[in-house]
Image (cartoon, rainbow, N blue to C red):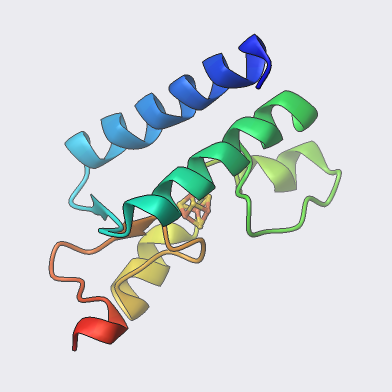
Length: 101
Ligand code: SF4
């Protein structure tokens, strides 16, 4: 892996860890999935300039796309409804993975 991507992955990890430290949410207990999303966020930053949501399409309109910089504008509603955000990165504090129910 190139040094820049490695640094961006560390930045993405800090971003999501700082967010869970200051929000009511937690990281998905599936750490492999979290690692995958962090890698995807780092690639978005490298290729597109921001930590854009890995599971949403960019519109190429900066104002519209600003809404999908992680943590995106939609995750609170998604977590409230489903217990988990669209990328399965952040979860509610009482989230139970489907297989464990
Ligand atoms: S869906 Fe989740 S991972 Fe994707 S940008 Fe929103 S908060 Fe971040």
